[in-house]
Length: 346
Image (cartoon, rainbow, N blue to C red; front, side, top):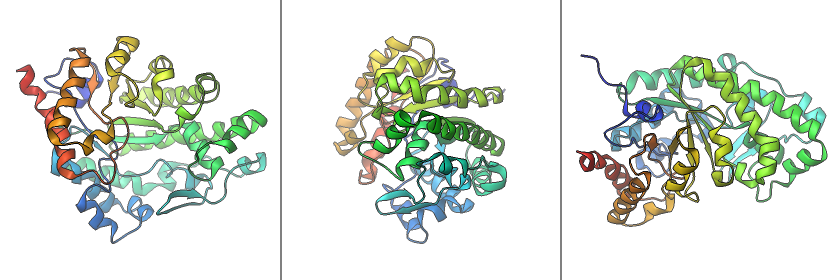
């Protein structure tokens, strides 16, 4: 008798499931004491580039909580370095020391081969896939083109994204030239991850919410569509997550991806009404809810589950990444509350 497909994959295909699958963005990270122990020995980028340790921290939350999916430990900026960017991480986050501001800056960027420039990521994926139970799919990921362009032009995070918008509005041909380098880079990067063992792909549009809906459609939507189209032949489910998705949810649902990840500012029940049967939805517990007592977390999980109202294709997740000071037992309460939903259906 053949084993059923993993719960996570069935939900992504919008098939009936005994309960929603659950995982957390940034689930391998600073809220775990075992992760902090690893970080005492090495810097963030060093950890990303050390396959056995990247595998170890990917597995840590699975061992502790038994999530229904694992996401490889890496960072969305990893492909920027082989393109020609100088990337450093410190206590204040990532910095790109040679920001892209002119056509000359864009012209010096290359479209790298992931197999040749980030072999450590492929090895981390292979090690992790071999170590995971068959029931736990492995997620590979990248940043969306606009989000990576914003990092590359701003030189890091920003409050206003004034530099990238200056480029978009003042020199749109330079902006487009940058996107034209990012899209094939990211397609190759994702395809490489699938070849190394990733069974699901997620595209993070972390900063798309800083654009007006009109500008998002003009400058950011089509590049995501091109990345999705570039991996569709692989037969691997694709999730597109956007922070601030509410105003352009229907646009993302029409990209050709299998699922859209939504933040907590979007009502989950309304989101299902808006996308209909086009895609699965992933989300969307407010990460700050995990500061509350376990019983309140359990109540919020049940409330969100009731909003879904039995419609297929829901994956439980946070509306953004788990925060580093969340108590570990509160994170565990979230995962356990979703797992308990199997008994609600029984």
